Image 1 (cartoon, rainbow, N blue to C red):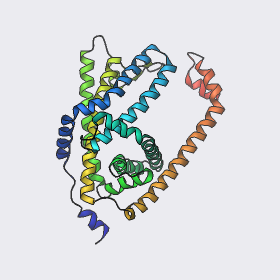
Image 2: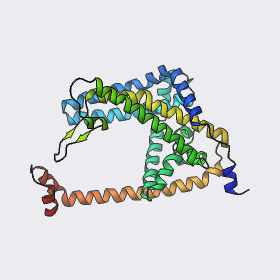
Image 3: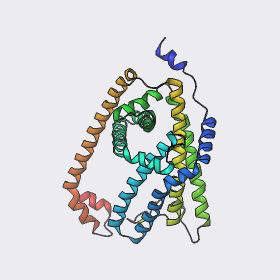
Image 4: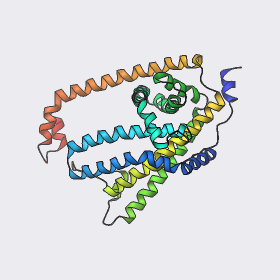
Length: 314
């Protein structure tokens, strides 16, 4: 049987409606667990907003780093809790303990994924979009199957093969739902917040034309958006991906070593392209900074000088 016939005869994925029903039922049934895992990074993000309001950039940078690391840990704990379908031993504490044990391995997986995506997008964007979808199940291969590094990325790719368009359409439905909910909540906050708010604030931040000043969104809007992300958007996305991953494994079976070998080689190729791309970007950035950095700093100290004059002076 030809490859095209095999792909054509693959059993269908669950419908978008079925995936959303399973997702929301899980989210509702395990909301206390989700809140318990997400609460600390959310509170840290609220403190981050307050620090930014004080104007202390050094403290804001340090606190931002802490918030990112704790958020990544909670993100991993959510993957564990969802992968065990909410029955993980120890609940919130148990999920966090398991996340701490494999945190560095998971961080390495995320780095590999980022580098591979850089390599894909460097090859005229389309391969990057393909890899973004094909490797979206790597965290579940990492947690459920115990695969690590390139093998986890290749396993995700294996499950996505033959279902690329179906996965894309379902992920687009998920993105559309998250965007719609975020828009509704943002509009509600803008409506009820006392005092004038600029319409551009809904986009996150606005740029004042002809000025170097940025107008930041209100703290209330930031807090509400962080709460929405921590308690709804992120958990719903992870749960949706889990049920999609689970369906793919049931349809295709666990990935064998023989099936993963060629995909590991392809993944290594994209990683190589990504490393080269990052090296080129860093090298060019360093060259521009060394060559034009002093002039740029001098220009920033001259208020009212048109940018065109600065360009002519280079």
